[in-house]
Length: 620
Image 1 (tube, rainbow, N blue to C red):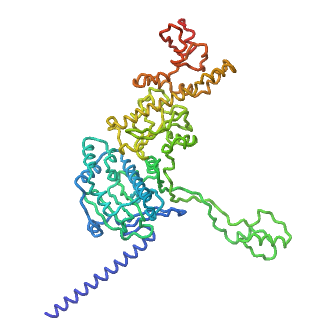
Image 2 (image 1 turned 30 degrees about the horizontal axis):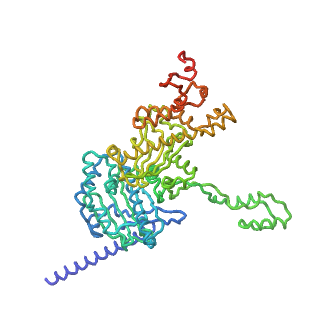
Image 3 (image 1 turned 30 degrees about the vertical axis):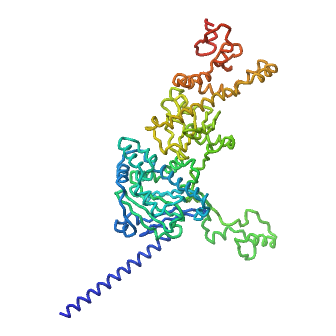
């Protein structure tokens, strides 16, 4: 009996030893793999994010661990804590994940906007506490993607979040806005409204089936990770394994594990276009890691020594060739007294061109938000460049330019800044005249706190002003006002009214500039007489009216509140002696009334296809 027990004990001890040996082997293997992964910056079995140095000549993308894609719930719980979303947030995520909205681009707008807000917060904090920027003075956003892992990463050097911040901001939102948004979408509202209710972060699940948020705050010595697959739960744990470049000094990195149906956001061209669109005028630099081809010169492979010897010029008595020292060759030539052509001198190794691919950071928001400055601080060249930016895509093969502009700040119940332009020529979509204005896209871009919202708000300007380009940026509007709510939004109605008034004032100023003062007109008549009409082609308003006169006539019919203002901008051919020829200056209503004979109570007009036809009419 004792023998059997002893035998069983020995077997048990042997089994324990075997298990320990296997564990040690596994641990050693894992350690070796981890070290190798750290070298390649693709860690297996741990989360690692690599932040490239801004001063590096060739910057590498930050990466994350593939282990996060396969880890089980038990492993996650072992690293941190698992929590349950609030009921409202769970409902919100269900709506987002199961939505059929085709415009998923808004997730990128929301995340870039959040990053910009985080940078604003640390910048404002640094005004009171300078040491806040000791953990990093560069305020920027960097975006990279990995097609193989299907991961899109957005990283900022903003204020960051503590563990408690991650809990309160990303899991247990106690805002009525969440319920309001859910009710709005449930009634058929646009998903584009998401940012208006303060829940824009969750739009990430439009394109991703899993989201990780890595964050580091100055007040928290530890770096934490929040992650969720939108299954009703989320986990928060300390990212203790982060080392070197993988460790955030301050800020937040969001890693999106892109859905199969949203892989277009891993395309360099698509992503670059969207990032530029939504970040064009944000104050902080936004970079996208792009792959580009570069042509370099490399040393060609050396030929066999025998072939080189055959091609060498015989320089005399067993002289040893020295390819690195051309001076030795010259010295030998002098001693031998022989002449040698320059082409025979050793110019170094033969070079050939080779095309390589490399990753480079490219800034996507280099345009300046000139509307934030006062008009007196902006040079005309800056206005010209700004117009080219916002008019890009509307003119094919032509460098667009503007004949007039107005730059202003509106104050009152609604505050906003704006710049409006009248282009020298009609854009391509209006080539058919005002009749096509009802179906063309708006040319006014709406921004809220420098974050692009939309350029499809057709109601910001009426159809007859659809040729005007411009930008509107408001700090008082709620983020992401959509088209469906536009008709009921009092602030936007106020903006529309002010934009129309400023546009008409711009046209009136253009017309008044062409009218000489009474004194100048008298002096010009004395010196040049009738020749004062020969420079009409150099006047701006006749050129403007030739391009857009038909639009103003449509405005007189459609815009009753501004009918009188518009009528003063209309111009007509006249039979008066001071106006002659098809290229002659046209008259306006005020000038006609001043020339009316005593007792004349009516305006006489004649319809014709040309001035000649009108003059030859028997009624004249």
